[in-house]
Length: 333
Image: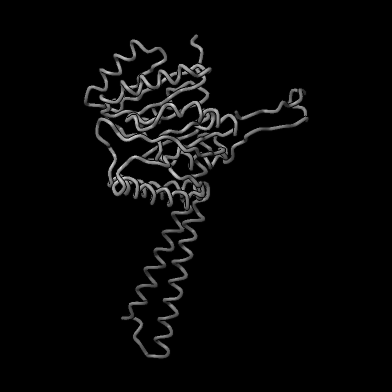
């Protein structure tokens, strides 16, 4: 049997033929200096240039390199998810394939994770080498919104260079553009999250795949993340709360209709406030129904998957187990 490595480096790539060889050369030198055993998992996300041939050439001469080729371009979130599924290391490090992340930061990040007993360590590109208007400004706005809505305060959610404890990724499901929200999603299970300044280098070759259009998709996914973090196990609270607000608006409109009839003699049948009352009552009933359906689906989901609504980090007890033996302390890591 192959010995499982201690460190796994996951690199999603899409049309990075000019960058993949210099990156793997750098990474080989850095990982060779580590005391821990390591592997590299490169996920080829449907590249249409020479990336596949470059990877095949490196796979034949670099031990510990594993290449996962996707059937088509599924996007960075799917590529990272595929990388996580194919890693074996206790520590999982993600890295961009465009060489803007510096592999030389890896030993320092690993040491900080161990020293501070972290489950997630997120890189912060404090001195970012990207265009100001098209990349840095949208990123700063998105980072501020994500930190505000998720209560996980990070300066740079978009930095791919991160270190994860493997156990923290076990129940992670990624969709859409969710890869940038991984620290926030893991915070639900009580993951210990830290941040460290990392080196950011200007792109030397290839073309960036990011643009302003992605900002809209990120904002929509942020709504999903907020719901998952705050209301995924209690949807009735959000839909029921909205139903109560709409019902209050209906009550206020109805009082306005009565007041206009009594004091001004306004005909109720032609009063637009009366139609507003009817509309709000229908909307309140629909919202309340959505909340109840959400509660039923939530219970079905957790029951079908055998999942609990909590995560145990460790258990300490001197009480005997059912077999009569003392219960040992169980560590999650």
